[in-house]
Length: 149
Ligand SMILES: [Zn+2]
Image (cartoon, rainbow, N blue to C red; front, side, top):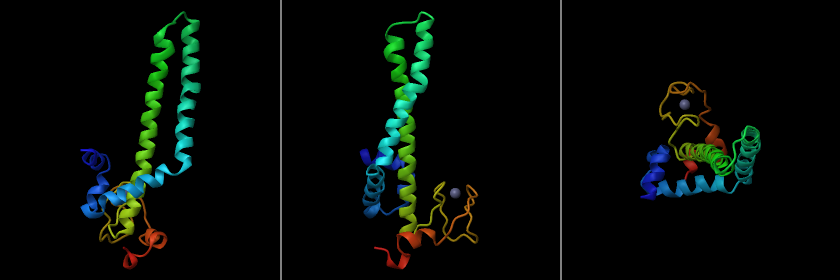
């Protein structure tokens, strides 16, 4: 159930064999989770949204005679929710990038930007998003295909 949801949320996983899929998923998300930059970013976004949106808007509302639970609780909650969606989007994006690097390292060439299957292309440019890629770049940093596990 949970895995079906993850596979739907990260369609790149379908390009991996089922035997390695969840191992790759685990390493892709734990790489993101272990990096403090994402925790700091999440806190900065949440605090920033409250300071930049909630403080001026609630001050404006109160100065125009609006008080009570909507100004004090509902509106800050809405901003926190929207900031949460932004954080989830950023984390999903980072995990997706790791998954695509993992695909490339395992001999399944994929565009890092859009996930397009880059197998057997005549030129090093993604036909889907138009971005150039270096066919050797990921192999060089993550181990050559003939050395793959
Ligand atoms: Zn692309």
